[in-house]
Image 1 (spheres, rainbow, N blue to C red):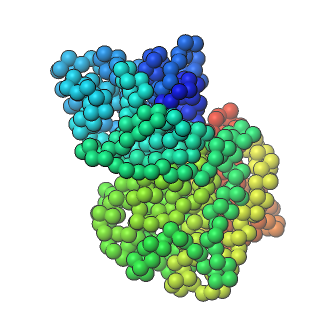
Image 2: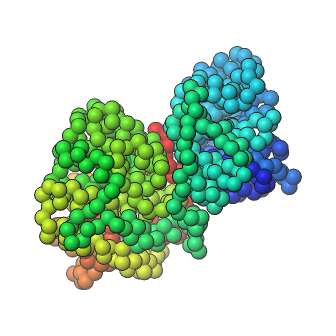
Image 3: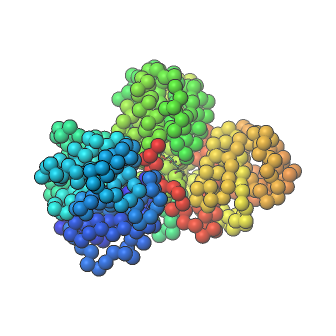
Length: 606
Ligand code: F6R
């Protein structure tokens, strides 16, 4: 949510900054802006293409800061685009987060004669720094003092004209990554724009400020104590943040499914013992033996992964599980103790609500575990232990490959805890053996993408969709609906099949199609009855069914087949056609699924 990118070195910074912004576009695209001390500032409403049009030919320099905005305070406009300046036009700040006390700070600064030009909360930072520059010669001291006065969250970069080589970056609640190159340094909201230049990165922690020059950097805490931290090496290369011939990241990432699933599994299955080896949980092995209850916290698609995890862990590990939305958890008074483990599921590892839930869990004495994709992210660092998905960077705003890897990780958790408790060797081996075959089964579904593209053409007329499923595939229905809504803006509702007759079936007519997720599992017959109920009311039905089921083809209007598997693994297969369906529906409507309106990847505000 909002993207920042900054560079200091000896290359021409302009093209570098714009390229960096392009790879951050999934974080926001309400407005874009760039400041280079040697050339000035350019801002534009809209994404980087609009900014590029406004950059003059002589816009050059060896350093600069750039920003993409996802609007919180102040409408999307050029006036509100970052970087924001002080009164003198000497200090510029690009910021991700929310300054909660900006109104009182603004009033105080105005009374001292500062003139504001935007409606944003960020602008107070530039004026505050300006105010403190009057009392110090060092830019970084002024930034540090200013930060003591603000309340809220920030991931920010600041520069002043007098020190063109220097960038000051700071973090409180919004991610900041420093890239360490040879005679050059980068700063960004996440590693993706840094990776084409260097794989050596340092993740700033909350309450840290970095003073960055082309050949050096120093990190201090807000109280000015020094921080020593070496760089870590990111293990994915620049090709992972490109589209590799696909029109959109969303399609590329869906198509990466089989590879992603292999990566999540690598080295973690002990086939002959029907067990999972999760090195990331070893440090808390003693505490895990005492756990009597899990609370899974997550948001959006990751929350639906959690709901599926609930079915898995309760059925096979016999451990009670509750699944909570991150945004709700901390506002209740959850009853937790040392025998409760809070499991946070998050692709980005930065989602503010999920992070707040983890902190709440810790505060109340629970053990906290993570299933996180982004290596080094805040949730990964703040949880007591956890596993990484190894899905690689997810650039599409809509989560696709991360979801299937989350589901796989939850199966691994189920084997891990199940075999320690009630799961037999036989069951463990059956799940482990079948899990090994899942990547190639996903490849079979993906090879059939042409059929789903045709279905999207056929149903492009629909203004509403219902998605239904039961048991393990009920949350898959919820996921089918959110995916369609977010990328194609078609109204969609996900429902438990059995709940339809308690309300939503009233909406059904011949223009209101339903996608029914009906694999051949323990609830197939019940699902079939629900499909009959829909057909009796004239509603068109697309069935996602198991290969070889000829009966369903006679009832549903259209069928998409997925390979046969065991029930616990069926969501990993049945969700893939729904991801493709959402993608092709967006395509049919001429929409860019990588940039759904009003959305941004990594929701770092609450
Ligand atoms: C939907 C989607 C979002 C995210 C949610 C959580 O396609 O991408 O609903 O799943 O914002 O994000 P993470 O997993 O990064 O915590």
